Image 1 (cartoon, helix red, strand yellow):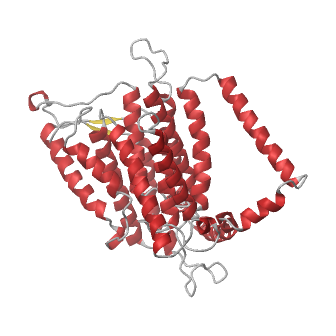
Image 2 (cartoon, one colour):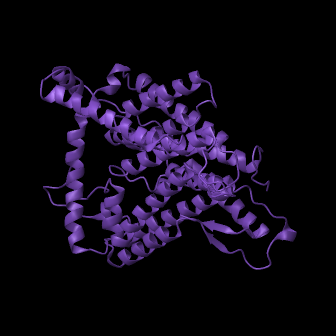
Image 3 (cartoon, one colour):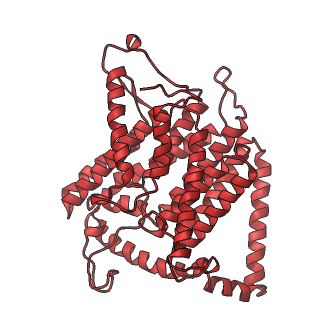
Length: 442
């Protein structure tokens, strides 16, 4: 197998591009929600295992502490699981995705990430365009009707519109990282198409995650440009002043209130209250269950619960729905260790990007201004990670394949900021002992 080196097109490079384009194609799905890309993932894992054993490469395992906490919490919670089969399936999915995540780190390490960034942009374009065309051609939905609260929603090649909207938000940030790498027409046109897809999905979670992600992108971009903290604070204060002035003008003076009410009634914002009612019902039922099982009810067991008639959300059924919240699901299903591990995992990922935004000179140890292209990538991934973390409040993203590819890219960025390059050894240079496990620095 060819080495993963910069600027080189090889088998692993083609494999990565194929993954980017196939990851969002999850419909039609097979048993256990297997997708077409899973066949490619399994082949890659087999090839990667052969490479590791043949070259005796060291296996890098980042996020060791939070992963151990989540795993231990899951095993403890399985003791009282209502549906052990669902718990076993959830743990198998955890192991499968984490192993693939480790493989992605190794084959992307030291590789030029620009082709992967462009592939994410074009993948987002294809997913958004396909979803919009389906709405127009099959469902006869006009462009202006896509922002209305009722009607068909864009789901493209995903299970539901919330997944589609969240994926397009992530693609949008990858596109933002390509400033000066692609023509302005392509970049702005792509961002416009993805925004249309996000609006057409009518996903409140995706809209909220986009707003929060954009705010984090601004802060991270200011850090990569080494902007003075007072300048950043002044800009934030100015933005808050403008927002509060607008609220005061609408609420206190009634300026534009009629137009705002009309827009809210005829946009997907009108769905927010209805969606919130359903989710609060789910969360209240899980809260009541957690009081009886403080160590967790078992991974994947949220939808195995039985609810009361007053709390049911499925017509004619008393079976509960999924938690629709990664943090609540981790706390209820995997107990205190599970939620602590999840929060630590995200904190470590943000810490890597925060440090990469102001890398240090390996010789002097002094902070240096990163290359503009690298700085844009770090800021964009900060926005994408923040958007994913916020979207986890309304949908469970931890079993999404594109989320774990993003997490792998974060680890690779951390390595690039520390000056890590491609690592390859000839068989003669390989160690005699089995490869050690190295824990990535937080």
